[in-house]
Image 1 (tube, helix red, strand yellow):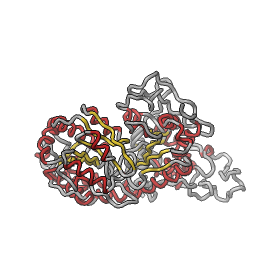
Image 2 (image 1 turned 180 degrees about the vertical axis):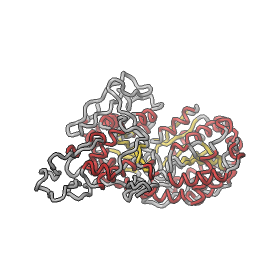
Image 3 (image 1 turned 120 degrees about the vertical axis):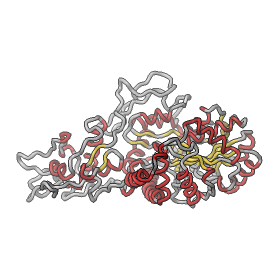
Image 4 (image 1 turned 60 degrees about the vertical axis):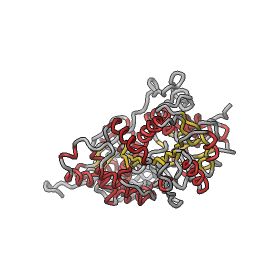
Length: 575
């Protein structure tokens, strides 16, 4: 009770079913709702299932309302045994269509449970699922509020457009029988996925509305350590001097460069000096800056992995480089093919190749280092090496040959891409030119984010966060693997031992006879985003999908893969 005699209601942050720091949130499960009744409905005293109640166990009290004024929710609309999923769906729809805009305070769980005549556990579990997906958050005594809303559904009259896609946009075909009627198909522009002009495609796909996002490359954003970040930020603001708010070194804050050196030594086996580190705005800027240095050195052709990251390849091409495909097999990049192609530099992901997930094996590593020692330059994109589950750590190439390896890393896959913080280590002869290029690019990264991140690294909070998200990611990976086995029979899963995504191929299955761009379009029409494998190829290859599992809750992953399987079964064989 507070000073006014009012009963205090725990919010999502303060209740026992959820916690304030997202780093302690657990995955939602898809079991039946825990409740007093078998279906989660609270029955009036003296009313038993089958006696004085409805046939499905819902109470029937003359003159009593079973609904709530809030969103006009009526528990009679919920299916037996699925009240939590029903409530989550209604709240998510209200957030998406604007009835619950950002900043709206939700009813206390006890109040809403009483109005709906369900146990409080049904409401708190629904709130927890929405909190995990990042749409609501607890604010202590401020209650539970809406903090994020998905993109509004596209209308048939104004569907999203794809960059450089040919033909006018049009709505996709209706969903197959059995698909939930409450979720209309997502309009997809003609030739969106199959467009040969891929500039901006990934960004355009991010902007399309969907119900379930299985795009690769996104960490568990709902697990962002808000409380730890806030504590570190307060400590930083209490300690900074007025001079710290002036123009700093374009190389980055000394505190962060020292912290990065410690982080790389502990987690990637790299020994470095803080003077070797240049703080950048993510790996994307690192590639742009390196491109300038390579062109100044007369290098205009860069070898890339095939398949390999479309986004990384486009960064180099935007800077004026010609990208040369080098095949990847079960042992990693083909070094013999690298020699033959004649490129003087290569961009690669040796610790966890994107998208196949293979690790560059020992013999290939030795061959690559010999190639580099003969004058080649290796650009090592260490994009998600921290996320490993079923294999030992793999040392970074930079730790073996720092004189020829440019090493790029960031916190985009560990904390959030929106932070735009990364680091770049280059050979000594390139360092001064790199700092100059960074100065003329933006004068350096923002100081507060750098100092907060340094404090998280030095205090051990970042390692704590990594251990936490590894457990979450492992569970979600396991859910996706099981779902692929159940709904895409015969499909082959690649790269499950580490990372944030799976590559799925369809050799010897009905999926091998369809275009993966058609499959991705059909999945999006059912509300599920995924990348066709062909997007990440420079040369033709077998069809497949690249599926991210880190950012979605377990029940969303299961449903998303089921809808992909449904889409696959409806597609005709490619001509």
